[in-house]
Length: 215
Figure 1 (cartoon, rainbow, N blue to C red):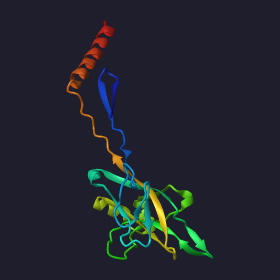
Figure 2 (figure 1 turned 90 degrees about the vertical axis):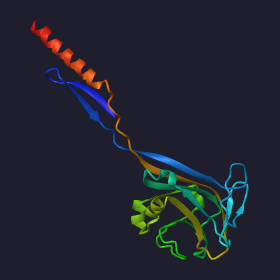
Figure 3 (figure 1 turned 180 degrees about the vertical axis):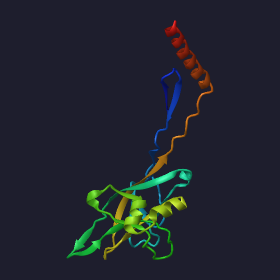
Figure 4 (figure 1 turned 30 degrees about the vertical axis):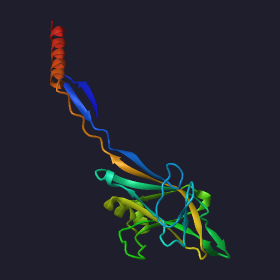
């Protein structure tokens, strides 16, 4: 908040209060996968290397991970940016047939088996790693899913991967970072208790100047 003291005609003092507009802040959550120091084991049956988790389309218990958003329950979430660092995810083709094509999926509201129409879905591409995917109200509308709305409502951002290639495949996921953009509302700054005295002093000073001029 900016306080501006302005002298107006007649010697009175007006206090002009201007409130700064709400600004956006970013909260970052990160997973660094592997068995090394400070690394994260996501669970499941996918093999862990020192610096990555090897995600297989043949695993009985497929990789999935969840970012807990409950600490942001009192904030207004505007968007998610999911950044994935990976290798050997393709895509690969033989005679226009996909042999490897990995997709990241962000959970929507329908959690029943085989339900994917409400999930955010995007293809991985080795040449573009690390890749960042924006999930927000606009992506929900464009893709006709509800992954953003569901993640906000549930206080959890869950993602996993599927392979649409016809051969058995594995890729290395090094890390995942979720940047959460929230509205950073600025609270009004209370006026100091001495402000009335300050205003009275300005008023008295203005009156004194008028008497001096009259003399």
